[in-house]
Length: 405
Image (cartoon, rainbow, N blue to C red; front, side, top):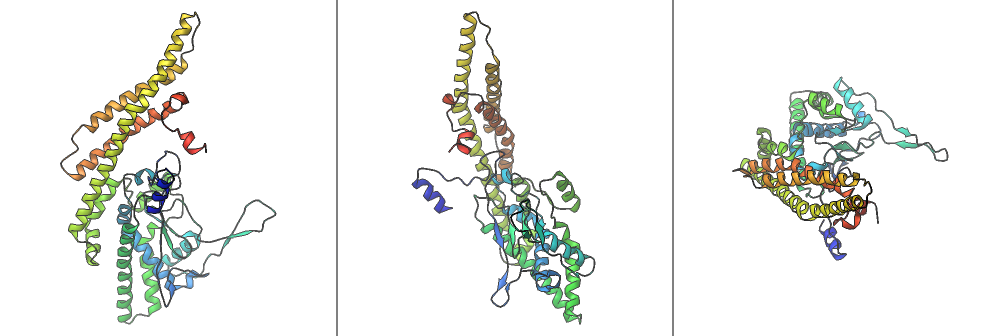
């Protein structure tokens, strides 16, 4: 990120890491690729051609499923920010609901395990591309789902929800801590079972069945953007923490405090301080954006739109004086959004002048209340951008920035 910014300045530009600078256009984010292994065994998340026979892989994969399901709220808060809120769930970014994509092959294996035992694995399929001159291309049974926040991609899991403006250390801290908890739990269960005289293979089978039965609700291979998934996720009991302010309280839950203290990562007080910092950061970020929205709208966009309105009004008056019947449609097309912009700016200015609250959480909640007011201003400005003459419009347009080189 530092290199990008340095090179951009060298060429007279600015490198932005805002996750969603343009509405309805793909945003920007990071992927955290997570796997486990050691020098003796290599990667522990390689399923092989017959994953139903690979007990080692199944155990470690089940540990991931348990960790993500049990601590989904912590994973969500690890990627929460005012800017990433605009990105999650839109234009190829995963939704705020944390779920795991396993692919058809692994999902089928774990479904078999839930019913008692896995006896087979689905093979690779083929890709139909509609071009006769190319050979049939095989598809990986763990093919990718771009709407999944936590997807298995062959020999690792990809956490796709982190924002482009953040460091990945926080998601990694969470992932390593919750995986330590899962591996601790599973190792303890197996050691206890074997210590009581149970056959190791049977103990593994029973543990895998328990894990997928209790935590399998987090596995979802479908479309994360669909309205049905919102309903289904709620029925499965999966948290849907849509905004940063919904997610931050996850840092103070008894489960979060217990797991971080158990492994000596954070104390309860340290988690409280991090929640406080996140509230303050959210309030400052939205506050700065709101003030800039007010300033640019009042001193740049509104004056330019009124100049064009004056030109159109003068044209209408001149035609009337010449005895002609003028067409006032363009004047009306400009005047309506100007009125909307004026009202929106007044409402935003009033809200910015109000008391935000006596705590960081209250200030953050007040900042969140500014978002619909900013949206109203932006909506009117976007309308004006499409009708005001180009020579009078003072800012780069969407068309110039996105489509004209």
